[in-house]
Image (cartoon, rainbow, N blue to C red; front, side, top):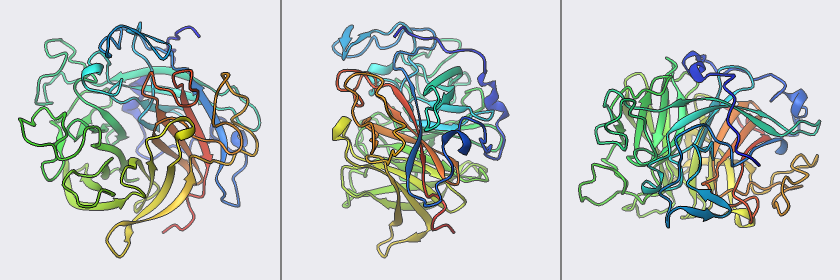
Length: 423
């Protein structure tokens, strides 16, 4: 497939016009009429899937010149790339109009040193899902917001330090989660600090980074200064939910602290967007295994969240990736949030065979049941009371869906029992 440039039909100036309440998205793209009727039995079922090819690009400059061992072909991908790739997504939120989503990649190619030419952006996308009733299963890409620091708020030298635009790159921050606030501003959870970052709707950094309580620092924190890191590389802020009234963020560490005697503990921190400070409330989530990742959080209501917990597998080795529901008011006897499984993303029922036929010879994990095969499934977006969209960070040029190809970007719609056991 030839590299495709995104359409400019929908500008992401729309980010500055986000409504405070979540739009219902009752359009043909995500409505029950397009993706099957609501599931009264509350059994999870795949109802839609759309795929954006990995070789979709969004204009200059080139990217990927710093991958080790250097320029060349990796998994069939020729580096450096001719332009900025619209690659795997670590966060998905509502767009500015019905049917639109905003999808944000992370820092690029999986590391700080190899992503210095990857520009941090959030893209307007419109999936046109394949469903039981048909549909193309494609994704239209619109315009994007570029995250930048023209006012020098970030507090350390950035890769594009001397430039007029001071665009942020994957060598500066590792954005893993995205939410929008009450004033159409954008809140980003970052792994390199770990920090919470605050931008306006056009991507301009508004405040210095908000450091987590306890002086937590990753190995990539520019202020580490020879001190020991508090958690492993790439285990900082991964998932981050926002309350429906936009007053509070709930930011979660992906992995355990190095000093924690319980390697299954993951901390979730409450942050006030009005006071712009952490409140001191900290919740504890326990994974099923020490090596599992807490990879995203989204709010259902003022008390309940859904969470993705996953293993590190890919392809047919992707065995554990489940969505759980937790209630911030309810904990176990030992203080951890109670968990109730919503859907097993490694075995999603697909009775209508929405996932077939394969797009490429050798695709795996399709059919009934359908499996989310990417290594880093780390984006979940709540559409309504019974439907979620799941996305992947494909870590270009890694494989998952097909062992002979780099992963495409998949948008997966699952009908799930989100309202069961409410409160």
